[in-house]
Image (cartoon, rainbow, N blue to C red; front, side, top):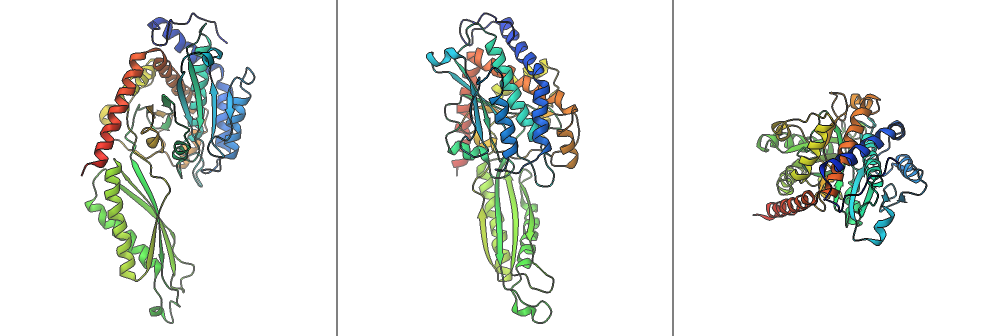
Length: 431
């Protein structure tokens, strides 16, 4: 533990110099743990696991907190709502007898992609969450009488497929949290990118098998239906808004060329800036699927995934604080125009942003490689990425300290969250 400093009178009444000392302590503690944090990240990276099956990564993370000195300082719930989710919590001993503690949470992701491994850098997301929590804890421990705060780390599996955070929302894991933090690897530093809503479907066509040479007229070709559906959606693109996205694959197209395919299967993702627009796009796409069935004489089943990913609600108040801290650490952020006009994806953090204020910035890891490529997998496991990953963790920890010790900031974050949520609700219910 570093030198103990006098505690500011109350959370939020810290003067600027005292707060900067706390931020410095947070950053120093992250540097002190750099070797252990890097080893944690590499252990996750070296054994990629798919959604809901992240057993080794889950074990690495829970053991990290269970073994973090001093002994038993983190209260760990190793299977929190899901088999590969967890919750680790630290609070100053005095918090138990005081007023309700402010609950600040850092989120970790650690699932990988099929065939590519950690091509989205979720090993680094996990490292950032852990490192930021360690930094915040060290800063609070350096205060003679820490404020009533709980530092929480949530392990959230299955971001790439399924939506583990949505499962955890439904299980109550985000209840009573005040602010949540995480950060995602990218090609640049951005406090916010407009991640959009997403709806996933599996489309199954059922036809009738027959000999493709001897009597093809007796068959009903399910592959034809899949091809027509694919082409229908391609034609639809001319009438799609520029902000809409449709992408899919033919997962099953038959078993042998001389057998009329009796079954075919497609998987499609639909994305739009809001849930309301997503519903419009989904309806158009489903019409394309049904038209293909009608044209070929097949029957069709359209199966939606269990969860839709919501668009991320930005919190500019929190983003501004993060940007200010990031710049102190040497981060260079992309322009507002680049944010609004740049590429975006989807994340189950969007659903989190509808239930608790939070931030989901993106960070540069030392490469121009694009996410979901072999090159990004290599970069996510490189030593070069460590500097940028730990710098991001420092910025998150410093921003969390601002939230704790600046009541006007926390009030602004809450006020903006409430207003933005109301705007989203009105948007999605308007005729």
